[in-house]
Length: 194
Image (cartoon, rainbow, N blue to C red; front, top):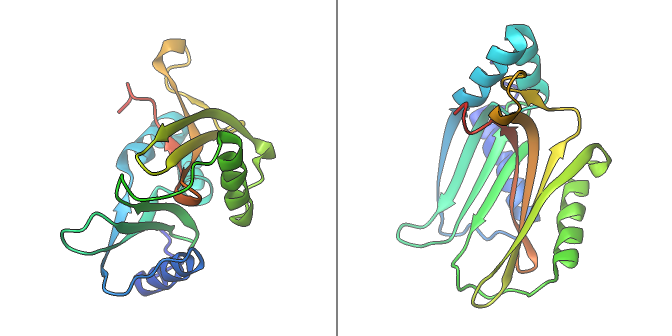
């Protein structure tokens, strides 16, 4: 694993990202761990070979990440950020109370917000296919979730068995009320393989 970003550098990258998104981390404890997605890596190695799996893991799929967490003991709210080995934010999750207040955006308004968020992160959705959206009505807001697969990233688990499932590079964005509260880029591995 070629680490371009050290642990302290990952903390700075994540802090900068959260500050841009209005997070007030005053009084929050933090933790940092280095994580490897063994299932995704094994899937890539078995189906693409070591050389192509290594290339994909370093360029396309965040197999190794710094996982950072800010939390207060015994409180629901927390912030999670995943920084890949090159210093790119590849995951983000703001956990809030289910009853927290927020807007009731339409699905279209929330989709525009999600697409704008991705555009600021450098994603051109022209190369991605929308594969799902859902909404969840909370007591005081509506949450929306949008999913895209990168076109051409499909990896058949068992090419001779179409029911076995396909892996792909995936993006998920969750909008909580009027705020992007979740983002993740990852390799979706077929459930049967897991």
